[in-house]
Length: 331
Ligand SMILES: [Fe+2]
Image 1 (cartoon, rainbow, N blue to C red):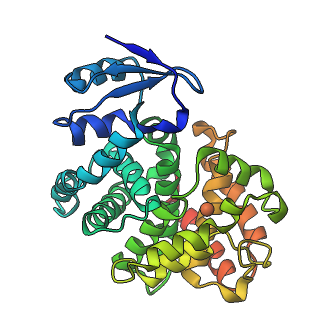
Image 2: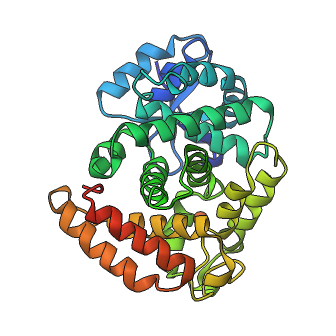
């Protein structure tokens, strides 16, 4: 049975079907589908067993459904322990494969929404920890760069790009003699959290702005420092390295980045590695990406990176990236 209603779009929150089925099976939730910009339709009532309804839509290729904002807020808060225990068994046991990528993407969505609401409770940090370990394990288990299309199909756009960026950053880090697992986890966590405040339209604006500060909204301009300030409130959990990457992730070697305009002499080596990795992923996996020309495109993008990042810590990161490519680790 379905009830069609016309509410404000802001009254709903998107959630991935896979995450809802795995983590939320025993909850009583109203489930909605989005028909148009402003139109939603209820496809499951609180008293219904929504799993069978969701399986039906999943089989038709639907990947996301909607909850009311109130249901979403209480669901994401109360589901944290389930996520932690579900992910923990696979992320801490070395002999098991990493968690299903769809579940990591679903956990990422939930973590983002908690942090945007400035919820940094112990359980939220537990989700962040499990997700970080799951992400690093995924990267260690296989080279995800050649599987962009597969991940894009199974995961949110944001999680896919975070995963790719974390992979490239970890490959670069391996070229430095200070590389270790702890530092990779710090960078992976930064990759997962850098853009928690941004919505799809903010990413479009960012892309179209060409980093021109007068084209950016206040929210986009200051999201690095705002998010860093939120994370800094839990400085026992979030390392200074993670916070610094988040704060500096849109800076540029010339000082033409934002929000602080820090040039190449004022960012850390780890931040430069993150920025180079992010730039590579941005240029590599744009709308024109084709899997069958992956290796050739990789070579072209790395040549561009080497020309773009020529100073200090950025140059070292760019050169390390070229070395990684030369070793055949990016195809
Ligand atoms: Fe950002």
